[in-house]
Image 1: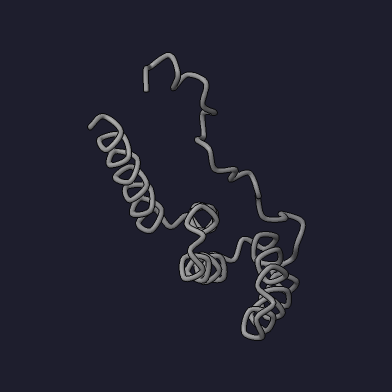
Image 2 (image 1 turned 180 degrees about the vertical axis):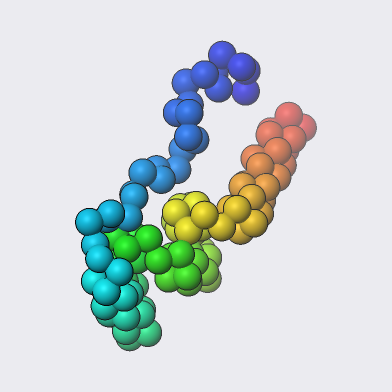
Length: 111
């Protein structure tokens, strides 16, 4: 990919990470919502739990959602959760795996 093509990519990359926590929530509201999100997560209501964790910015919950996405073979969704949770280690690992896969595909195409 040329430098010219890279200029077309958004500055923050291809993963939408603008899902900012709601800053109007009080600490007690966040605690209540996170407890509800944990209950939903534990009963398998993953998407509702995810929305709650994104609203509150609960990084532990976002990481657990990301791990679940990984186990479901949804690495792009997992990467988004890890990015929102500010987990640079897990994010970097997934980005590196994606880069390796792309390199391999390009090498195979050149053969």
